[in-house]
Length: 83
Length: 434
Image 1 (tube, chains in turn red, brown):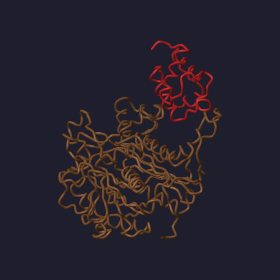
Image 2 (spheres, rainbow over the protein chains, first blue to last red; image 1 turned 45 degrees about the vertical axis):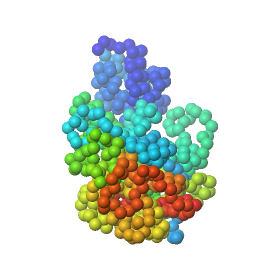
Image 3 (spheres, chains in turn green, yellow; image 1 turned 30 degrees about the horizontal axis):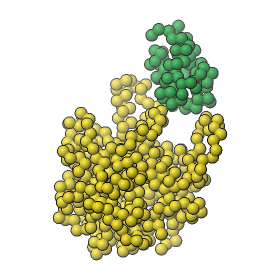
């Protein structure tokens, strides 16, 4: 797929998070920590990661998933792989 | 009477094929309505049974989508029934957990509170998350391993509903899920009574849930030749004690009661709907699916319920029978009732088979029929056995049919029978609160 902009990744991620854990899209902003700010548990993060892989066409290994603590971390990770 | 702690019922909740709550279910029962409907799934063309008693209100109408994603349907409906029972008992809704709790400065909700260490939960399911197990396998096969939800295990385990209810209401005295097929949630009531008597809890949320109306389950029961195949008139298929009954009808639903020590209930001024007087159990030790033909195991369970409840056969005015509408089972149970109460007393009581309207909720049946038995005593009205047009010649007890039957005033008691594959016989005794 074409390289996504930061905004496109943010929007896509917000859609996934809304679908999987029911958090309003407006609450998903780059500085938010998944666990501390959005109250997303580790099993839900696995689901979100799988959905994000499908949406953005990138592979997120389990080892990497542990390091993706904020929304911005995911945006950076996806952008780096798409370059 | 005995020196046992008196256990009372202070809250009722249910979501059933007849209604999304207790009041709507109860009025449909009194009106003799059927919750059984034709199913339009193409795959059912291959099997002899094409109908079931699905929920009247789908959980998706009540629960947010994201919450439903991680609950099997049996767990979602257990939560819905538990919430109704909790509020009905006069307890305050549980505080919100997690991130949002700190943000909101909402006033404390109205209602009584319970010490979490004195609150238990016993919610049973006979089958557990069948939909989840099968759907997750389909996801793997069709979309790849990574699509197997990480919530598959907590969604398919039969104790999942008990776990979720315990989490929602903060039940820390113990969380249990007894599994004994169609007797599962009658055992849940019995276990809850024992938890309170043993001093392990003051309040117990107990009940049962089942949601397995899936083609595989229907094919499996169908292959046992256990289900009705009255496809031309599904709403009349479940007809206990009728000459033309031909098997049970699969139903889904959940029912939950709040049981409480009388002392705890009186201290907070709660309304007492009935006394959960006791429970009797037996094992047939005979066959994995067939009931022991003489019915001696069933009779033992009823007699033991009387002993446990400190009741005499003459105290019993009514039995909510297991009565699944199978040719052999319905009559065998009536013989067991006669053996348990004595022939003379058995002929004085009323018997009803409410699965004629709700279908058979399997692991949810004992709890739903306990709720119905409690309402029967409280309201003094026995719901009729629906679809009973041509009484079986072998029936010699007083089966309520047509219109509801009024019970006499005074301190009455009733039994609710549940029997499960595996030879599990359970009878729960309730007394009217006076």
